[in-house]
Amino acid sequence: MVLTFYKDGYHSIVDVTAKFSVNSGAIRAWKISYEVNGEDGLEEVLSWKRG
Image 1 (cartoon, rainbow, N blue to C red):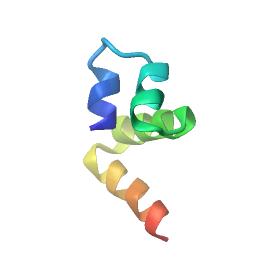
Image 2 (tube, rainbow, N blue to C red):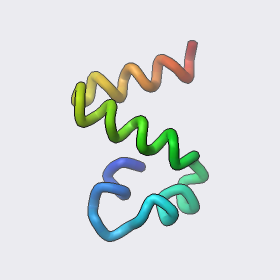
Image 3 (cartoon, rainbow, N blue to C red):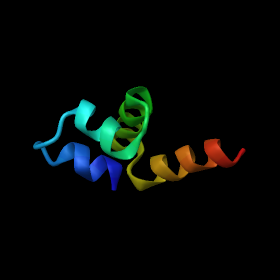
Image 4 (cartoon, rainbow, N blue to C red):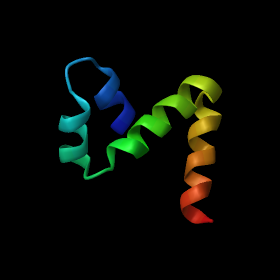
């Protein structure tokens, strides 16, 4: 949801951080992970939070 909102081209990173209360660095990391590894990259990010 967060990446979709960011990648739609209508919202800046500032908009996204304000709406979802997420650190801009985290959003950038998720975006890179998704671009490199697809959905598997996002599952890896989820495991970081659980670990």
